[in-house]
Length: 113
Length: 115
Image (cartoon, rainbow over all chains, first blue to last red; front, side, top):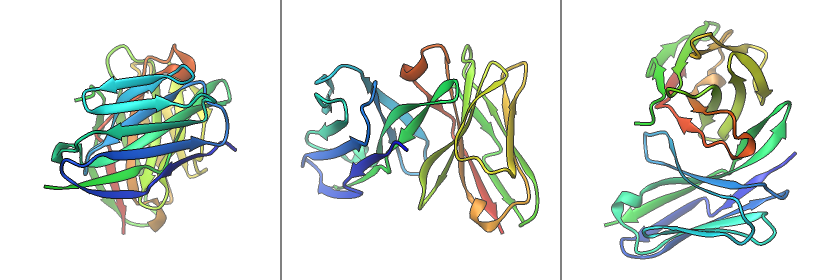
């Protein structure tokens, strides 16, 4: 079945350094969604990318969707301690009469102040 | 605050027991999803309901069942509990009309500990 892989598993950075997590799907995706889960919290929707090659920015966060719609990345510029958490990508796959989201394993970001 | 509520927040029980987790979706959302999150398995989709009907099934064990009621709240029933069922259980909701582009909003989760 469809798989969504994410690397790295962990990233420990000094505050102010940049951070990137990469997401790869075994199949072409209609869209990709990114979620952030703070320690002890629940996943929170960040953004959805739909078009091939799409790039979206949210302040210091830059999201990209690959040309083949099989990979995506999230880049954070000048990390802050508030960026701490696990970042998940998720891609939809058809199941029964609906869709389910396949989540990547997540990248846990730790930021040293 | 996502607008999705889940109760209880924590649940501690013994092997062999049965528990019920409850979820109320955001106002206006018709779809409810259940996920299990454990350390070694990540976020695993269990089941989806849309307007009271089961729509999609994931890796849900036969010991687990769910339903969505006319007021759209949902319950996840876990029976014959095993140690390995200890995990965080999240409910998420979405409008349910956008298909693959539906955005899901997660509740705070129920932490289940089976002793």
